[in-house]
Image (cartoon, rainbow, N blue to C red; front, top):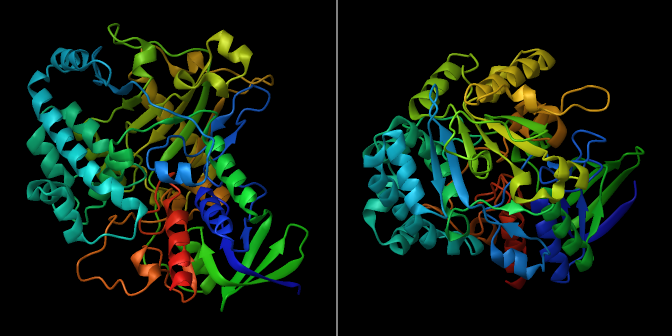
Length: 520
């Protein structure tokens, strides 16, 4: 079996693996990256989901908030991120009213609260998000350094009530003490439930951790649109790695890892070995456990259904006071009142699919029409990405996956249509052979396509972006939050301590640990 020697071998060619490859190769190390699929980018890719239609969608991940400016500047990434004026629009189920959060017009936002009958919540809303802004400004600068400790974070925040409410008590308590309207409460809670199956009052605080990552990005919590789609982000990282001299190999299935040796097999069936001083695992930790013959410490469970659509135009709203371009210009919440989200959690806990399915929409093409062909742009076409919540992977245990996908798709479309003035199917384009431009991905589809166990987009349960005060930080891997359960292997993906989301931080931190260890 052929054998080659490098300073670093990276397993996994998603955006985190590419980030690590770029940093380490630019530091002068010899680097080889092994990716099992035929393309790089992992979940951060653009694809023509509907062949021949002229639209390249961000098929899996779709917005950017947690990618630090430092990584963009360090690696000279030629990407453009556009800020959305509108934060969100949330129809009140069963009515012709909704709540529009307009960053560009605070008075319009206040008027929208008042029209909904929630005018008394404006001050509580503003006060709560002023507190999360304070938290973000304190925490965000720490993500590009070694892990701070909990007491360090408390000192940086400087307000014990903020650390208590957001880092120690269930998120539901601070929501319920801040705002009273059911719909307004639901808008807040959604940020704690992205691919996280939880109740607002869960004692393990997974909802708090998820919420934290959704409000600290860039120090503002804004979620931006990558021009050209998410593939532009992974493509820029690939370019940086290649410019640094890293070898990037696709169709390379890893067979074993141990003692600084990684065995892999090419698409042609040829087997090879790579020997390296540093092994970085930029895939899901549960896949590494499986390779090592060990049981994962806990189930890596996603909790979402993703539906991509190509539309002839934006659908009409029941709310005549809000233009469709404004409603779909931010995050469009569907059946996500606080009561509905908690009810959906309990329904799924009983083993059933929630009805209606809570979900949210993102329309890339409003902010960045470049993902559409000139003909589609001129025709008024748009893309929609629907991301359903509270649909845990466990619901698919033992199911016929094709039948379940059909059921989930129908449930998501029905939920969406229930808050519109027309059925969503009325504006869905069809392919030349007559098929509707609808693509549905369940957690099992993500597991099969991207080797994400349980379809968990974070590769496992999220962890706080800091270490506990009594936690040993006795080597570089611990200090950077990339220690794995196996000697000689560093975590470099979303499953590292601060690696969730499209941030590059998993790869950045692993590279930091390697460079610190070599310097020491």
